[in-house]
Length: 110
Image (cartoon, rainbow, N blue to C red; front, side, top):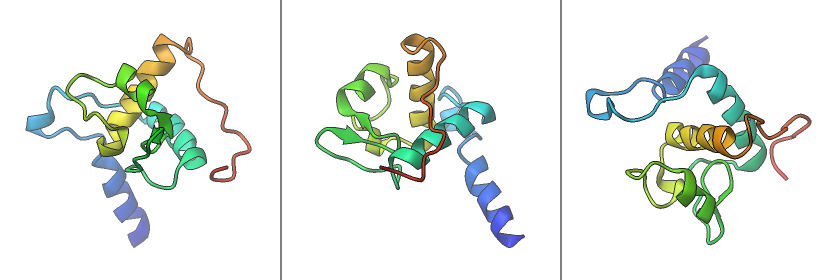
């Protein structure tokens, strides 16, 4: 039970904006669940920074540059998970016509 409370507090911090972040994007629980499925298949951490791929979704660095908000960090690996989720939702709605990557059958990475 203690684990579930700690987990829910940690996850809820992604969705609660502080007054300083009032204009920062947040995502719905349904989007967060879809993003988590992608994250669990792609990377082990949210803060990965590589020469080609970065972040918890394993995006190409150039793709992050196209779909991040202007005020977000230049590396996806430096962005909060909720910002990465927001960029993923933006990508899905703009480019992928609402279709999320199929992560069924993924066993936690490649």
